[in-house]
Image 1 (cartoon, rainbow, N blue to C red):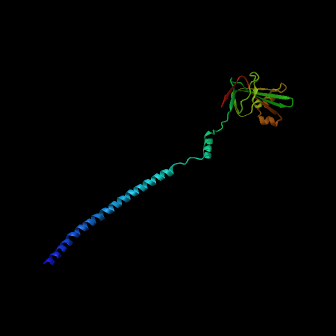
Image 2 (cartoon, rainbow, N blue to C red; image 1 turned 135 degrees about the horizontal axis):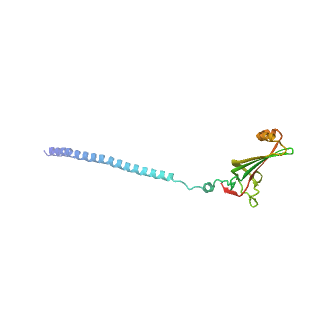
Image 3 (tube, one colour; image 1 turned 120 degrees about the vertical axis):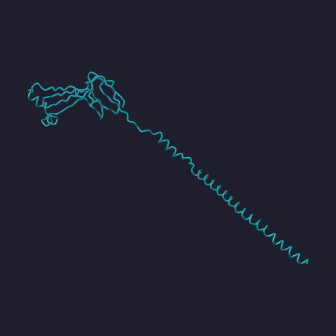
Length: 202
């Protein structure tokens, strides 16, 4: 009988112990992977945070070289060179007189044309200290300019030699400049500004 009791106690021990061990192992196994996963996630978050920091650091601009700075400053300080020009015109209306002098041998014909207004554009401011308003100035002789305008011919007059008959005067008056040149006449043209002048910067 004592032998049988020992066996039963062992059997009881065997039956009771395994469930406890199995449950303990199971709980340990299930808990450990969860802890590892969370740990991995935390590490992943840290590494991503590091990446973003490094990206931001990479995105920062490096200080420019001195040569680059100098070139940039030159570009900033350089301004487009502006041409200065001046507009010259008579102050009083009908102060522009154009005189066309036609000559052929001893004969001279003068054709006068008075304009209401006009102007010239010059690149350099002229010296007008010795300008005589009564005498005026021959603009093509005294000034260097590329642009000019004469507006509204107000009066015209032609002076013919006395020895030319009226019919010849009328015929010559009707001819164009090219036709007069074909007939042997030469032209000398003068355009004068008279009276006080207005000088404006443009």
